[in-house]
Amino acid sequence: MYAIHMGVPEMKQLWDDLQMKHESGTINKAEAKLRKLMGKAMRLISTDPRYPGLQTHEIPALTRRYGMKVWQSYLENNTPKAGRIFWVYGPNQGDITIIGLEPHPEDKANAYRKITLSSMTGDTI
Image (cartoon, rainbow, N blue to C red):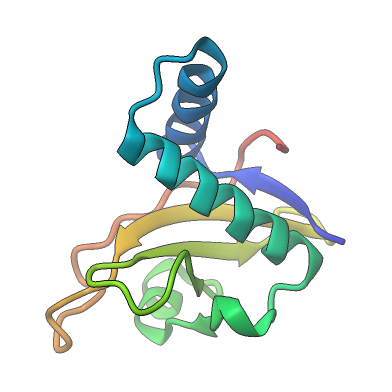
């Protein structure tokens, strides 16, 4: 079992915002769906990062850019512009840090050029 961390500042801020809105009852339909999809993906990643439904695979372009293996897992399948969650192992052994969330790229040639990822230090959820 892996401990899941949220990258800073973007991913931690996004998750904290979704959680706060959920708890206060002010979450809208799209945010509730995203929270549910992210929560499910994080649970599956923490248990088995290679769970078949996640379709986890390394993104070599991001690995080269960030100097560490960057993995992508699906939030959902068979959906136009379905979300993808990006993550890395670390900062410590037994940890996984969620460092990005993006829709599926449309431009295959430059698919990952525009993606910016969070830093690894973040709180465990």
